[in-house]
Image 1 (cartoon, helix red, strand yellow):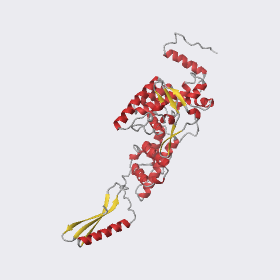
Image 2 (image 1 turned 90 degrees about the vertical axis):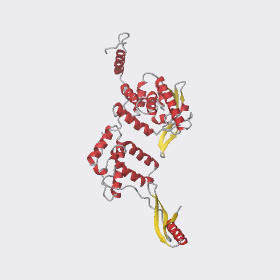
Image 3 (image 1 turned 135 degrees about the horizontal axis):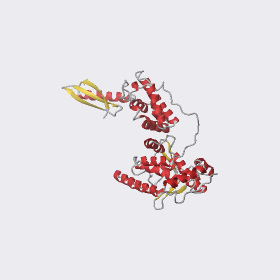
Image 4 (image 1 turned 45 degrees about the vertical axis):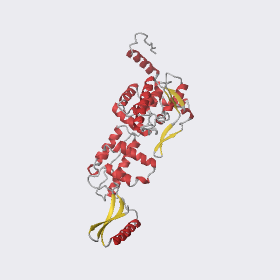
Length: 398
């Protein structure tokens, strides 16, 4: 209702109330005015006030934020989100949201801006580097902090300062494009062991990437209809990329990327267990669970695929928990697969299993293992299995 009135003092004093709008918290705002006269006169005055209010420009939304020494980094980013993010592209907004959630919100975001020094900011950035984040990610995180604090300084009239402005980025090696290192079997075992403490979807997707060497986006695109649980095989023919503010399905990287790969029994067991978990979640949420549901979806019913970046961020936390070296990335698991099967199957079959266009890619993805080192590893393997004295391998001294 645009306006109302009530008698506050007999016989002819009225309180007129006109709706003005809502504040940022959704609370209704009114304009109040006293009027003396008959009821008919009060109604006419109320109508005039309502028309006057409706003719005004839309009211400015009042902000609940009060800039002070207690303002936090999260307050500043939230204010920027409310007053500025609308001008950004959807992909940029999604990237900023991810950085805020993953790197800032539960750590430096809780700090009061006034209490931060450039020294502490640089320690925070160096800690991100120590966690294994890429230089580009750390640089973007600093950029988000700097922009938010600079706007807070402007909007507060100088009440809030910008401690990010005088901070510097950590140094990174100038050596470029170092090859990705394939993790050892010990490192892979630590990762898989730690993954069991995570969400079952994360545990299963890491296991499947290790077991098949599939790409991150390919794993995110898997549907239950792609999984042949009876024959222990998985069909790979799609990928997921982040675009337009959401996870988007796209065709394969190349025609060679369309393939069917076998999985081991342990990986199958994890898939079957996840299948039951996802079905139960859908039942509790009272939504449909279909064969076309995405295997690793975080939504009950599996209607949407997971974001690839979500899996990468989870892997970073997993790597830290497992105390595995920071030079091991999610993509390193694909290199592990390529290296581990190098001496077991033919080059052509390896090319097919990993979805490469040509054998040159197979050489790119395989860590070189000298024959002498391979013989030594075989000998140690015999010793560890207690079979060195049964049929010990023989080596030529030359």
